[in-house]
Amino acid sequence: MDSMEKRRRVYRIFQGISQTYDGANRRISLGLEQSWKRGLVEAVALQVPGGGAVLDVCCGTGDIAVAVARRRPDAAVTGLDFSPAMLDVARRKGAALENLTWREGDAMALPFGDDTFSAAAISFGLRNTPDYGAVLTEMTRVVRPGGWVYCLDSFVPDSPLIRPFYDLYFRGVMPLLGGGFRHRREYRWLWQSTRDFLRKRELTALFAAVGLEKVRADSHLFGTCALHSGQKPRYI
Image 1 (cartoon, rainbow, N blue to C red):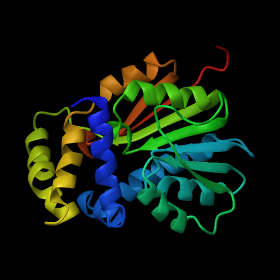
Image 2 (cartoon, rainbow, N blue to C red; image 1 turned 135 degrees about the vertical axis):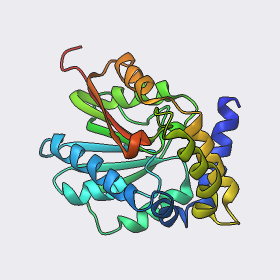
Image 3 (cartoon, rainbow, N blue to C red; image 1 turned 45 degrees about the horizontal axis):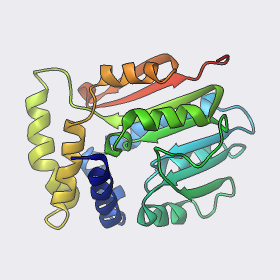
């Protein structure tokens, strides 16, 4: 699948599942997704200085952006996504927050200047983009020197003991649990996007390749989810 075809397919999927996306995520992660996202929010909140700015890339329905804006009312938070339907849901969630704005845009060509944000995060979105390196390069570009880039995403576990159970659940159970009969094909694609995604060590290497330092990966649930982080050098 070429990059344009992947972009069109992902766009159609997220336009179609926007209204049921949040509930489906809770079901297919057995509720664990919320704790993983809280870990990301806390990491961002601890690193951003007073009056700083945060970018949530591929923000979807806005969970991370809304949570960061609530956790850090002194920070300016921007959520960006290319799906208008997902952004409609996000706007409703964050309607009461004055430090939160939404932008429609492309993760591979962020509509912001260099060194704009104190931190940039992407959660469960990188694997659905056509060019992982381009997205991380753009996120690094718009983060100020000394700022942090975060990626929370799903992975195929490395353990050969865990992988058969993972495949059984995500290939057979998850599409029906997440999408029901109506949207099972869309959720089968989300399993495929994880299957085709980088392994954790490969994403760690990509973080370093785009120029980030102090790169680390914190794994959850036998490695089926991980939070990668890296700091933009202060002097480049």
